Length: 242
Ligand code: NAP
Image 1 (cartoon, rainbow, N blue to C red):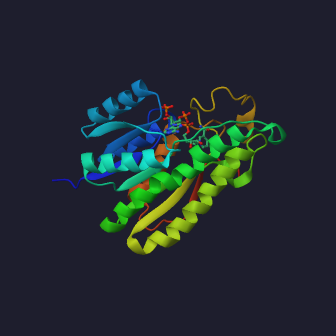
Image 2 (spheres, rainbow, N blue to C red):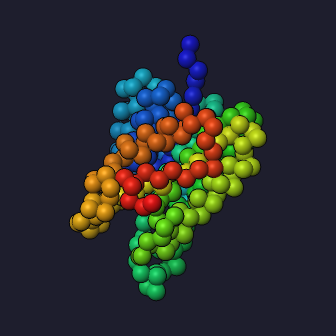
């Protein structure tokens, strides 16, 4: 009998999170599919995963609410019994020039993209510590490494996520838990569909935008195969920033 493995992927109804959920399902993980409001899309992800012969269930919760995250993690443990891998992927953008940025746009992005990592990982880490194993991947961004005009809120959250990754990796390593981050470049999803990206591929050595599967393969590698890799930030951007 193959060993049971369970992964929680936040923001797995669409885009990068969905691709990560499917890639991990292909590697034999049962998947807890988190989403915010798009139930139909989340149920579609669940169906696609079930077709691969593993368990999946959708969990609606807002990753920017500590209470909701704690409740959801308890529910996932009731349903699946364990969490071996966590992908902190859910995220939003509220772009705008800094001098015009509202408190609301600042706080929404910090709460959803950074505080969420604390809210979700805190209860999950306790479970992984008891099991003395686990792998966590945080979805950062090249904006968190190099900055990006119009994204002070987003870049701050993603840079925070990178610091969180490194510090948590140092705390958790002795318990057999690895923590890494992925920093995607421009990936074709709903998040980027309205951006004016004309000409950007000329600046990308691989001469194309990324797709969610490019990220998902890296996430799966970090969780399954990168057994001596922790505290790292892996750029997956076609060579855009070096
Ligand atoms: P996307 O297509 O817009 O999907 C966002 C996902 O996050 C959806 O599943 C959404 O759920 C979920 N979500 C949003 N707010 C949430 C909340 N408060 N609670 C729970 N779930 C929530 O985005 P994406 O492009 O795949 O991005 C995924 C991650 O990669 C993000 O962290 C993003 O910052 C990062 N990233 C993306 C790019 C890029 O070029 N696309 C580049 C660098 C980094 P619903 O479907 O229910 O709304």
